[in-house]
Length: 215
Image 1: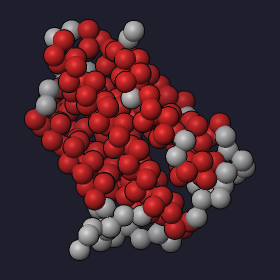
Image 2: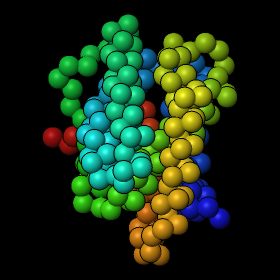
Image 3: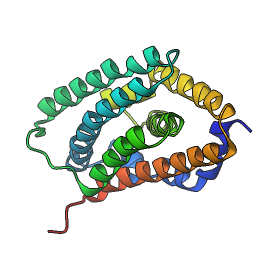
Image 4: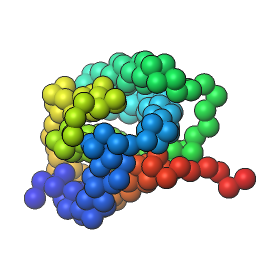
């Protein structure tokens, strides 16, 4: 079993819950409330801004042969931020003076803490897990799409060929990294993937149900 298959097997239950979440199902059915999708858009916008810092840290720690490809993710994330801004303007969704919801805040802190304090291999596994989750989630939406969605640009962004090629590279690379590490580090890498899967599920839940700070 390849390392990525080992990760997906361990996280199978949460992965299935993630892909069958009502947020994705209602998006595919073109009946998700605008306010619910707007909540996701605002929080994911904040998350991607944190993701830029995560990738920048990862590039600085990467082996020379991986750094250029990882660095190419920064312009891709900047393009995502531009997409968020364009869609927010079109749908009259505010992006100024936003506050991270608790789950978004925790996930971003998990990104940054892992990038700075864990091994490069663990941080790379987090990146693979997050991107694989988006590929699987948005591909599911595209495969089950009932019609032309008002949010079509997001669906196409994360279910298209360019993003598939990126996730494929991450998958091949994380398998290669896992082959070179100790059993204990390999185990920690699977732990990181499992946690990432849970954060991805919680992010859909946060967007769908709404989430605020207690006080």
